[in-house]
Image 1 (cartoon, rainbow, N blue to C red):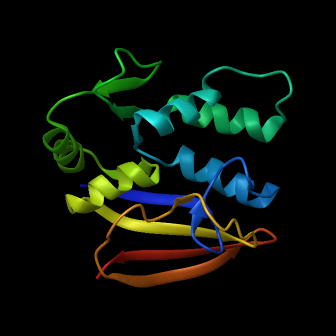
Image 2: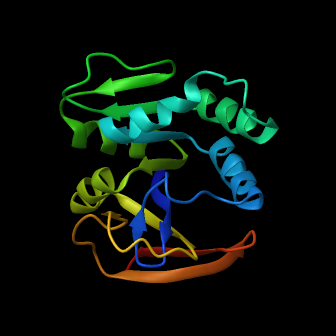
Length: 176
């Protein structure tokens, strides 16, 4: 059975914004390995459009960025959207019966399926589908923006904590 995992970089005050801060090289390597080990990813339209950045090589990328892009391109993606008419390579558009499709993925596949973005995570939390939350805290305070938890969540239980790289602390929670 697959497990749905939601994890993102966030500020100390709980906001996510990929343009305000980035992982250091050690944390970025951690993410590369994590993506290599995924069974796949589930995205809503907005986060999928952000991640499409990795679909085509860019001359300014370093080796780590090329490795991340290759890992990301190689994994299956399911994009939940009623507004998109098509999706890119190695992606499947899911426009209807989302809950049935996701429960089917969970039942049929093995491994971790990444949940991309707080809005999608809120919807999947409401359906009781998120198995694990990974909060990667950075020493940044944004004061506003999109929160990691975009809505109510079930009571959580801390299962691990660790430092990754120079500045990031990962807290891992499961529904209690």
